[in-house]
Amino acid sequence: MAAIEADAVSKRYGSEVALDRVDLSVAEGETFGFLGPNGAGKSTFINVLLDYAKPTDGSASIFGNDCQGAGVAARDRIGVLPEGYSVFDRLTGRQHVEYAMDSKGVDGDPSRILDRVGILDDADRTASDYSKGMAQRLVLGMALVGDPDLLILDEPSTGLDPNGAAEMRAILEEENERGATVFFSSHILEQVEAVCDRVGILQNGELVAVDTIEGLRESLGGGTKLVITLDRLDDGTIESVRSVAGVETAVARDEETLEVTCTNDAKMDILVELHDAGVDVVNFRTEEASLEDMFIEYTGSR
Amino acid sequence: MTWRTVARRDWRLTVDARSAKVLLALVVLGVLLAGYIYPVVTTEPYTTSRFPAFVEGILTTLVPFVGVLLGYNAVVSDRESGAIRLSLSLPQSRSDVVLGTYASRTGLLAGTLAGSLAVAGALVVYPFGELQLGRFLVFVGLAVAYGAVWSGLGIAVSLAVATKRRALVVGFVFLFLFVVVWDALEAATALGLSAAGLVGDELPAAVELAFGLEPGRAFGRATAGLVDPTRSVEGAWYLGGWAAVAVLALWVVGPLGLAYARFAGRDLT
Image (tube, chains in turn cyan, blue):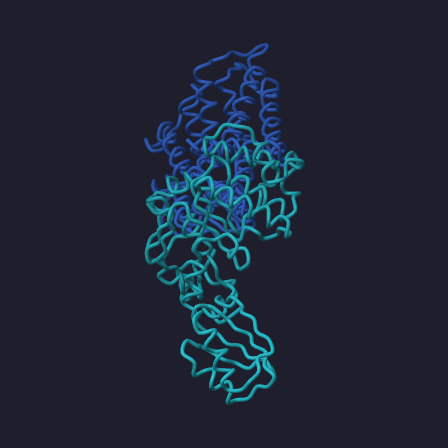
């Protein structure tokens, strides 16, 4: 059974389309990154999953339970770090975790969880005095209560310093190894690239790509970029490189540097072609297309 | 039964709040004061069944304000801040949140009313009064129901609107209408109708019924009809004691039900 199944989920606010027929299936046990620029509809999609918002059309389910019709059952086995929350005004951090335990029917010591997310020392302070990063840790702790089968996290590293973000990532990896499915949204590409099995790219409410990171690279011309420094560079040289089979683009970066994207097999052919044209190759290196390149390619924006 | 989880959390937060303490202390003070001076300012016989007629005026003034002020910010403030997102990310439904909050706030008011009325009853009985336990318990029950109407109205308001400020305004509109100007409205209607030559001295039944629906009046008629043997309710059956109990029950369920329907179908923004 799929952890998350979305079937043509649309959400419109008046004439504005926030989500446009999003189909998505997240398998049990995978770590799925939900990417997109701000305002692409990532949070709207998560809001539908959590029944904060009702879809205009379509439906979504979590472990087979409809998110709207059977919301309580859908949320029974999940842990959530939502966006736009605030902590309860006069409850301490410990009481927050106790609230989650109480609601999920879990016994045990909140200290274990508070320690795991690194706020045990502040557990008995009022949570409204926490910094954004501490609140984020606290709510992650609430999400971890009861070893959920699915974690849904909306921009989990918001408010965390680089250290905190790394700890967050480590916890997500531990949870995934335990067997939990992890679904999180982010606009920070490195994070997604580091931990995700698959990513989905959302753009203006439409899911424009869902694939593994390798798959995305493949579909973008094998994803190899050659940066070649030559002793001289003229239009004729660029033309002849473009004529090599497997070359996608060839662009002069400056007076003596040529950038070529191509399939993996074409690399040697390019060098041979340059040699035949009588141009000396001073230096060359290859770059893998980063997720950022792909992201820009897909969404046309940063 | 996750509404209990919500109720426990809400209870813990509400009893901690200074404003709630002040409001509830006001109720205690009013009721105890009534119990204390009742034997002093009225004539014999002092019984716990005649005491309600005396304390009623204080209750119908204090309880609406306290109920609305306890309830109006219940859900809307969590919604405004975003804390409700934490509640609703857990395996609990919107109805759990509403029911839990309602149980907690109404419970606070009901407990305060029952406790202070019990003490006031003791003040009435000692040293010269007479206890009529069954009837007094009915009265306490009615007072609790009346409290539940107003805390329910407060919660209903907090469900129906999107900001705390609006909730307060709407809450005060209800208070103003039902507690402050209701009698004047009725008098004005009677005057207007008779000046227009439409009616004689008495209001037509439908108008009388409409004005009688106000929770405070229903509470008064229920007390007169069911608690105090020296009083009786005159008029048609629909103005009798049991009908008044039914009216109170409708006031508990109606506003909350309507507001919940509105809240349940909405997106959190």
